[in-house]
Amino acid sequence: MVSVINSVSPTIHHVLGSIGASGDKHLRSKARTLAAGAVKSYDPTKGAQLHTWVSRQLLPLRRARRFSDSAAHVPEGIQLDAMTLMKAEQAFIDENDREPDILELADASYLPVKRIENIRKSFRPIPSEGAFTNETGDVGIPGQSAPDYSDESVEYVYRDADYIDRKILEMKTGYGGSEVLSPKDTAARLNLTPTQLSRRSTKLALQIREIEDAISQT
Image 1: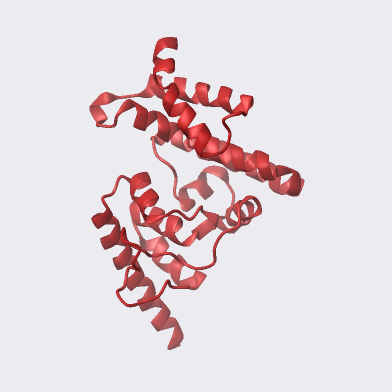
Image 2 (image 1 turned 90 degrees about the horizontal axis):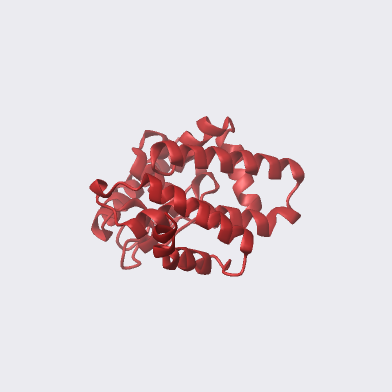
């Protein structure tokens, strides 16, 4: 096992470096523990490379890093709820081999969506504008600038969407206090091609725009 863990050390170093934690002994130890668990659970028949699988299982390090950096400036009650949220999210990942969407996380943590959003915003500022851009940086609807959708319209579409579309909405609009990612990172996180992401983003943008139009007419 030790030799296998050592073989994925470059992946561990890369992830720690990407979050600015190369010199953090606590996170390095946590990374090796998570990597060991990833190696044990790795199933080559599912198609993913070992380093890809390990990298995916190291995602909790990013949350732990943000939490440790921000905790001193956050009220104790929110800190406690954030710990509950992190544990529930990791338990869901361990059980389902994927990240939960916001509704699943709310069920797992027994925290309402709005509370999760407030917790996440306490640890990370969230842009107010949506980012429905495709792989070239263009918005989902040609000729339209980056949209600033209302929470009501996004939530309406979100609750009727499938898992992948929900995650796209989270990563592109910051719904539920989620981290806003670039199109490239969003596609990689969801195992989508740029074309697939662009098509789904365009569809979601159109659906939200229809809701916006309907709201404006009421």
